[in-house]
Length: 357
Image (tube, rainbow, N blue to C red):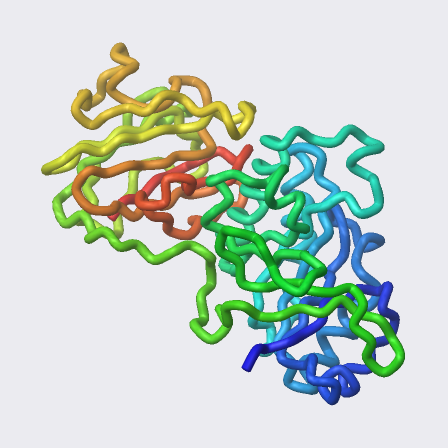
């Protein structure tokens, strides 16, 4: 039997959630947190009321934020907005975080509609940051936007909530929620209604990343980082020592390289201040030279320039890796080399350490 639910915002007023359950739409709910950047004035005025009522009635729910981001510089504030309000959710928060990417009120058009590639980058960076904070994250958009503005393989790893008010959803890619009408009447009030296509909540994922199908890399990986503050290469470490890492936490990193026992590892890094689309070239472990400062092909990075993102490929099974965020003063979640759109780091935050296993 299909699970049915509604999505709500302050526009729906004080929702009678018991009436929603009685009408057969209490299987799940998606509740608006607010819109745009991290300002309390942009919190949805019914958010706390709605989640509290869903908690008391045992209605599982997810949350969404309406995005006003026009470029990547707006993303972090929207992420911070979500993370601040997520402190209020309870045990029935089971259907993740969704980024509402559309232009229903014409704000983007009035202020300069971002290019499709920028819209994709905004969605990608938002979802990745929310994932890195430990939450399942996906994208809400109507069919036209998903087909014509957000149709990028870069976003395929993130779940979709598709708005298509019709008798059938014709979106051709994977999705979990279908918003099939904006005209569902419950107890005399009109709501957006949704059908759950895949009940991802029952499997309990914390992120939307597909589990790796590649075997783990079992050999030893020797790796090394360059400390920009000390202006030198730090000692080599290896992946078999799970407590060790390359870097001086708090000091910015200017280069990284790795050498596996077998196979080949490629590393790519990103310089702080550059657009997310502009990465430094991939560097192969075949060119590894310990402590070499003269050969730019032997490491990924630029001495004296701080790096904020790193990603890795491996030819002999997948490698898990993570980075230390100097700005947040903490290790970020592990990512896998199997997800080629993924990376370790937070855009604009200097990396102080890297760890591989």
